[in-house]
Length: 169
Length: 169
Image 1: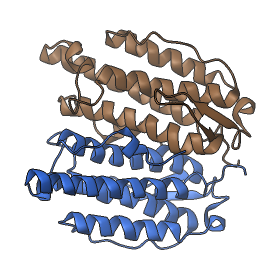
Image 2 (image 1 turned 180 degrees about the horizontal axis):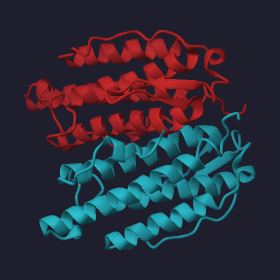
Image 3 (image 1 turned 90 degrees about the vertical axis):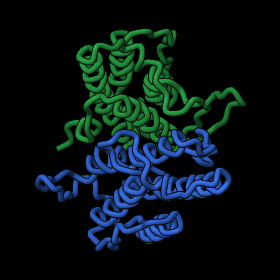
């Protein structure tokens, strides 16, 4: 089968959401074992002017959500960004994965040249579908996933590269 | 134009290599200004059992190199992994980018179902071209780029998200 806008996006999002949920399980178990509160991890940052773990997860969820919504031309579910626990983060990931998986290939395939508008604090900008997926959605998605993973590793959570990639072959 | 194995890989690699080279410039300028040696950054790790910055860059280069070589069925250039300076890392990135850009679309397009074998310390494994690109190459590439970026940010190098994404619209 030729690669398509759907095959290059949704299966990859779904796969990584599954991995991410497992990192949270591992982090929660680690915190329990070491007797510290997971709120320490939620607030962890790699630099004072980088976003904390909780925001990394929220944004890692929003990227795929807006990607499929914009490409398919449908409404994305709205979340309050008020998670204060790992249970709530897990719920956020599950609800996002459910939305993303609910979109059919025929809603996304063929959107390579569709104009997509991305609203930003400093003014919205427009990209074509394929460039949006390749140069905005994917780098951002992996950026926030990797930063979340790095924060957990930096804080001693026992994870390794196979946990980042998940089951791939 | 429909998305293709080439369009979903090479332009994205090239774009990120350009960004990465700029982070190195910024890091070197920061080290000079703060009067510390860039070897400090080369050896930086986010966790004791994670790879240092220099390895993150080497692996970020090797992923795209092997990706295009395996998909196109050609020989990848070999590097000694002996870089000890930012100048040498920049050279590594430039030589890798040159190799990747030298591969033509017709050498990579249509490799969605091509069997690709990935040698690993713990035994090689085989994936189809599209799965290899989506579930191995891209997550690994962004993992090492983001970890390198996070290490620089953690060590005070003035970078921001726009530097990670580069010029996208």
